[in-house]
Length: 229
Image 1: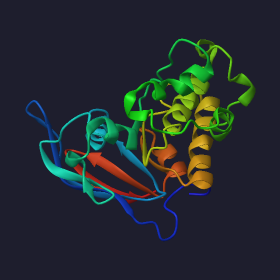
Image 2: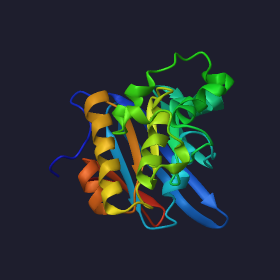
Image 3: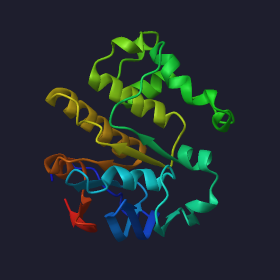
Image 4: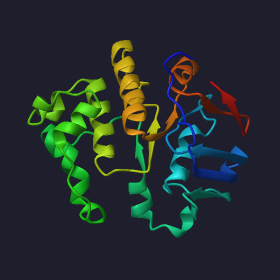
């Protein structure tokens, strides 16, 4: 477990899931699922393909509605939070990094084109790139020429620009080569270590979960179990 990220001492419960159930047709993805996420923690979600990992992430930020149970964010049931504000607060970065036409700067600024984010202060773009291990000199570079790993880190930086309370990462390294995967992992560790970012990661790679997390939620046969490492 050397070098793994995790909850900081004294971290308070930031996100609480209580009795969550979700069906997909006649199949139960997960049933009566309960777990918590502490402030400053990196928690991994593991399980076989089709076990509901990605669906769970989308329930957490309101993109998908659970059939039963509730999700409480910082003391508030998420059903009482305006959906655009919830998705800003619990921000999801998908498995395939979405890159918009234009420069790296254009991509970082994209979230601020939405009305919900116009009240937010603009961050220092160079600092955002440095946080994810990208070169600040590349701000005016065409984002379309970035490598797969660079695209993934840019997508993470773009999410961080709007200061989410929780960052959701859906298999962020599944399509990357080994070198790019390790650089994204180091970005995740740095964000947690230096900025205290609270992160929930879906991964099919148990070795990666051991490297990144002190705890992981394993989904299997409709049930979830919190394990160490």
